Length: 349
Image (cartoon, rainbow, N blue to C red; front, side, top):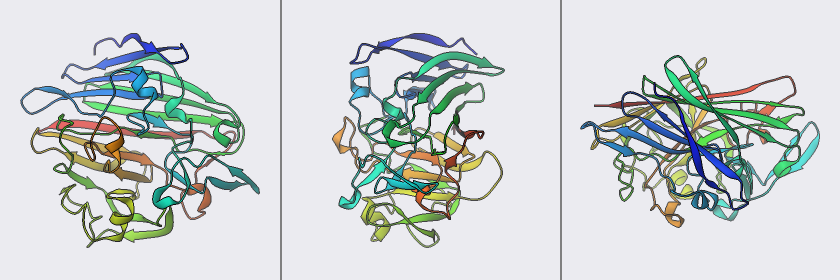
């Protein structure tokens, strides 16, 4: 492994310096992580002909990252995904959060609020271990930030290995009970041409059910069967094959924007596979989380990238979990440690 390179990326609008950490391996892979938002700002991977291309939707300047509204490459939290009406009750007390998203005209809280982790200034340091180089970023989300209770200390690490794996790992601890669901929100386009959509990518998701949602894209609690529907990605299928189908879940979300319930298993396990037939690039996804939100970039039209030019595979706890007792627990309490491991393995055919 080469040493992690550290340099000044730029200064925020408030004048704070932001460092960029560059990770490389011997196979030509290169990742860049910036302190602003703990963002994966770039991921470059060779294709079947050895041509190295950018495969994530990204920005070129810090000012553009500050103005981003699509969470490109970001670490989102304190709670990634949606919370109904921006409210939850914890230990008999109701909390109110910002309602910064309105699917179907119904307000909800999305990805941590108006100023979530994606807009925070993290503190990074280069780290290494056998066979991998990385960056460790820390941030304290103070009690009351965006309406959440308790001080939350968060450590996010990115690792690039000689096995062509990029690992995103999170640990967090709190001094008061609080919801936690910290999510990586990278948009992928394995073809490396952002003028083209991801509709010709093939996707497999290791899930037999998904969370049905209401008109506001909040889970109803129903674990819907994928078999026989456009939500079935149990085998590699083209993203665009059924995305415009006459299916209520797709019509209400404008395409794919749902949480698939991963098959049960212990620890880090296969979650999904993405393949671009033209470039030969594939990306396998592994996680220890119960779900993965597949978002097909249906609303990317308002930023430099066109509609569906990138897709997200967001490993996560279930959306709206603080309000749904039947969902996996999302409440972190003092003395406990929240952990989340997500691995992207890159291959070429």
